[in-house]
Image 1 (cartoon, rainbow, N blue to C red):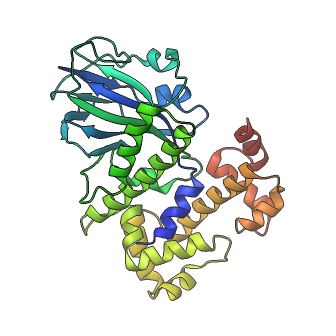
Image 2: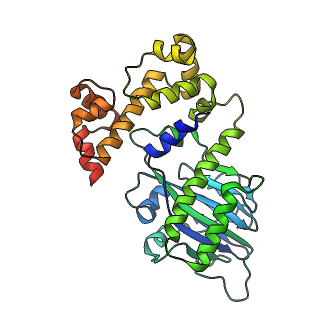
Image 3: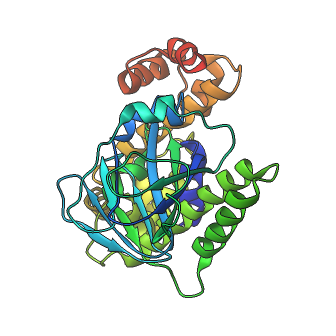
Length: 331
């Protein structure tokens, strides 16, 4: 698997973490999260796509996408909802709660991580009632990223990504220890530290997920670990402006053009040149967003000799001409 290609995509789609909750569960508790798109403006304003995650620091609980079969989470487990599905965490399977979308907008969070406790069917509070011990402790938060113009990673992840704690703890153990410490002391810089650590925890979780994929798996992540397709992806990402042809790409990875085309399409779901066009649009979007370069120079960096051809391709991909997209992104 090409780690560089994964890193390239994560940088391009601007993965970032924000808003942390240190959650305590008493007896017979349930917490229901609404779809992330409904609360994104409250928890990560201006972000294209929001994913929620939970890490069990102590005890155990149950977790389920609303309407799906629940799974049991134990201490050290990570669960991520890459597509932003509504879900439930509870002390027993099958429980439901009021998702209370307004709570996310009305709650004033002055410093993170924000402490919240659930007990019975009562509304969440800052602490458990006196005399009630915490049965389960979780560290919860959000991860944001761009979906447009092109994000090949999110689509290839499952609706619920559940991983057990690895031997030795890895990033999960370090993240949990730091999150617990920050929830108790709230030292300066704690929010930024947890944001970066949550991003690294997510990257580690994705890599571990790839290691568990069956050999017959398809999708972008399966393509990354394939000897030939992974090499082709690395080349396209390393030099997106190159005048690639399927023949030249096949020559460099060691396959005939027909074999590479078939293998790439089978794993990635589209031919190599179509993938290259979409990735060029993502590269161009980043350049439009991050600098003041004119559209003609961005067209060249994205692999187009003609500004007009680039503008047509970009509008097909995003629905907007490059200049209009830049103004919208800035707003």
